[in-house]
Image (cartoon, rainbow, N blue to C red; front, side):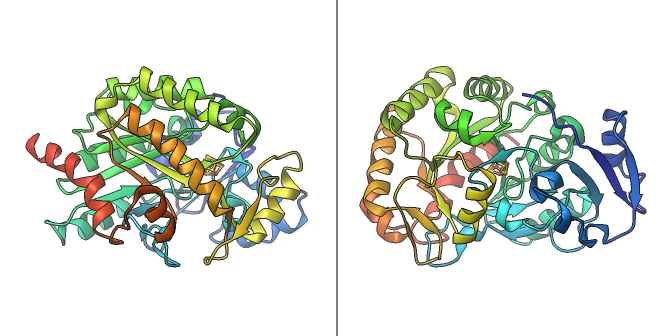
Length: 373
Ligand code: SF4
C-alpha cells in the first residue's frame, strides 16, 4: 500500500531531538517542518477548512502525552459484555479513512494526526501497572485511536514495543491493523507475547468503504509473513457489513484466510456489528455520500449507538461464526461491544464481564510464553 505522506510536520517546541522525531524527519526529507508552541492544535484552524477531518490527517504533529497512556477499552461501559481489554495510544488519528470510522466523531475538531514522543513513559506505566499484579494477566492493544502499524515504516515504534512486551511474563500485546506494514516486525522476536491482528472483510467492502487501506490479498500476505516470523495472529470481522452478496463474500474471505495461514497459530477471532452514534451517521453521510453502509436497516441501542437490527445481526453472527468454527474449531472467538442478550442468542451463554472472556483469550498464550522464558 502507499505509504503515508503528510503535507507538513509540526514539532512541539522541546521535542525536536526525541528519537521518533529524528527518525520521521530523516525518512521524510522533502516534507516541510515547522516548530510550534505547546497547545498549537487548539488554534481553531479546523473551523475554516472544508473537510477539516481529512486535512487534519495530513498534518503530522509531534507532541508529548501529558496524561496517562494506559486506559481501559471503552467497550467496558453501557452494559455491554466486556473482555477486559486495555489500550495504550502512541498515535491519535489514522492516515487511512474508513467510511464507518468512529474517529470522525471522536476526533471531529482535531486538526492533526498526533504522535506522542515520550514512548518511555508508556513503557514505564505498563511496567508499573502489570508488575503491581504479577499473578494477573493483561491484554493490551495499541489499535484504539489509530491503526497499530500504518505509520510504523515512518515512526518505528514496533522496535520499542515488541522487545519490551516480549519480556513481560503476564502481558500480551496486540497490534491491530488494516495494512501490510510489517517490515519492522520481521527481525524482532515476540516470544509468543505479541499478537498481530488484522481487520478482515470481503474485498467488495474494502474497495468501497475502507479508503487507503491495504487490499485483502496484501493483508493476507502480510499476515503470513509475520506468522512465519514467529508472531501469533488474530482476526477481527468487525464491523460485519451487510451488502447484497454478503454471505458469499464472507465465506470466501474466511476460506482464503485459513487456507493461506497456519490455523494452529491463531490466537483469537472476533466479530462485531456496524455501530454508529447519530452524530457519526451524520458525518458519514456528509463525508461519504456514496457509501452503502447507511442503507441497511439500523436501530438505536441502549448505549445510544445505531446497530444493524437484531434479527439480521444475530443471523450474520451465526452464519459467519459457523464458518469460523469449521475452519478453526480450536480458536477462541468473542463478540465486541455486544449485549448479553445477543451473546446468549449467538453463543448460548453470557460470560462474566471481566473474567470469562479475558481468561479464554489470554491464558493459553501466556502459559506458552512463560514456559519459553
Ligand atoms: S483503519 Fe481503523 S482507525 Fe484507521 S480509518 Fe479505518 S477504522 Fe479508522
